[in-house]
Image (cartoon, rainbow, N blue to C red):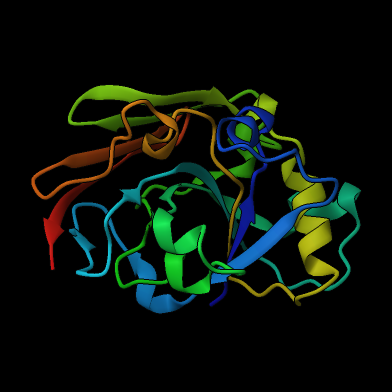
Length: 209
């Protein structure tokens, strides 16, 4: 299984962290050690000062494909899930690539519900929220993604052969804790919820290592 993530895919999120919108999808990966499920604990590593949660629409691949055409992309999708891309921000912005900052154990919660393409189509127009301890932190729409789901599937498949079970995390809307004043990191005892319209809610408690 591959976990392929897309950075800065919402223009407002790119702006809030001080980056220009990308002209091509910015891809990075997470390893299987990061994946946990609904209800599992997000563990804040000892190395971290500021850990952010990021609410994301997740695409699960259902049919193998290489160099998939954009117009055929939906035929390769099993369905959609809620996901959470965790990041240690001070590591992310002090290193030239993001593997360590986003690769700690438990740093990719993925929801249980898999909503089929037959119901959600290309996943446009879906509300994406993050709630922290019940309060809304992020609130956006997949209509604001710079690169659509079909485009991303096609683009990713030009590099990686996509296999059933592979995941593509499609980016996060604005409102993350790092961009707030004062900054709002995750703390032990917090509860993070990611909700994507038409899919469900992913809920995870936060604990210290």
